[in-house]
View 1: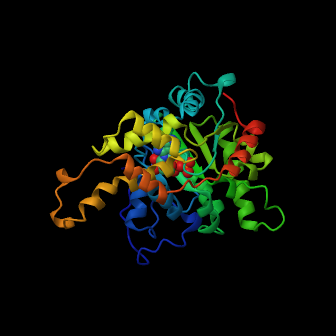
View 2: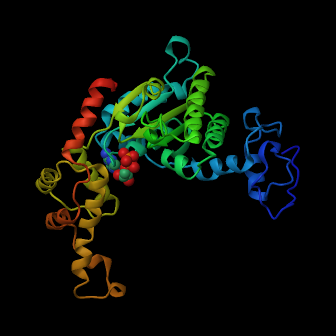
Length: 353
Ligand code: ADP
C-alpha cells in the first residue's frame, strides 16, 4: 500500500491517548492497530474521510471484536426453523435492496432499520447473521448493554467508529443486541449524561445513513420492545415479532441437530411426542434439551467402561427415553405470561407483512 509508514513504537505500543491526531502514519500506533487501519485504507492508500478523526484503538476494536468476517448461518435454516414469515419480510425489505441498490432508490428506497423482538433464544441473532450472509454483507455485532457498561464515557465515540467502519465496509449489517438498553425511554431523569449522548449519537448516525443512501442496515434485537421510545420506533421502521418455535419448527431443530452428528434414530411418532412435551420451549431451550438427551447413551455406556476405552460404535442411538429424562433437567426459559406482552406490542407496533 502506498504511503505506508513502518510502525515505530514510541511508548511500548500503548495507543491509549492518541485522540484526534490519529492518522495511519501516527508513530504512536502499534503493529496490530496499524495493520487494521491499513486494511481500511482506500486504493489511494488513504484512510476514508469518515475514519480520519476517529481514535485508531476504537477502529481497531470495531474491526477485531465487533466485525464478524464469517457469520456462518445458512439462509435456508431460517425457513426450516419455522421462521418463514421473518424470511419473507426480510428478503424483500433487506436482501433485495442490499443486492440491487440501483433498483431500490427513490420511492422504493428501503427502510434502514429493522427490529426483531420476542422472547430470548428464538433465533434473532441467527436471523441477523443469516441476513448478512445472504446479502454478502459485513456483519457487525454489538451488545448494547456492553456499550452502556464497558464503554462508559466512550460509548459515543465507539458508536461513531462503528458506523464509520460499517460505512467503509458496505454492504454492511450492524446488529445491536438488547437495543432497548441503548434506546430505552425509561432514563430521561436519572440517565447519565454519557449514555444520553451515546443515544443521541446513535440516532444521529441512523438518520445519517438514511439520508446518504448507504448500503448499511441496522438490526436491533430486543426481549423488551415495550421499553423502546417513540424516536427509536420511528427509526426502526420494520418490526418483526420472532415468536417461540411452533411444533414443526421444534421437530426440525431436533432432527437437524441430531442428524448433523449422525445420532438421529427416532420415529415420527417419537418426534411427535417430544414436540407435545416441549410446548413453550424456545429454540435455544430445544438446543439445550437435545444436548442433554444426547448425553443419555454416553452416560449409560460409562456404567461399564472407562471414557478412554469407550468405542463410539458401541453407543446406542438417542431414544425417546433420553428426551424424557432430559425434560426433567431442561425446563422452558420463557414464562407464558411474558408472551402476552409481546403479542400486544406486536398488535400495536409490529409489522404484519
Ligand atoms: P436470540 O438472539 O433470539 O436470543 P439466538 O439467535 O442467539 O437467540 O439463539 C440462541 C441459540 O438457539 C442459537 O444457538 C440458535 O442456533 C438456537 N436457536 C434459536 N432459535 C432457533 C430456531 N428457531 N431454530 C434453530 N435454532 C434456534
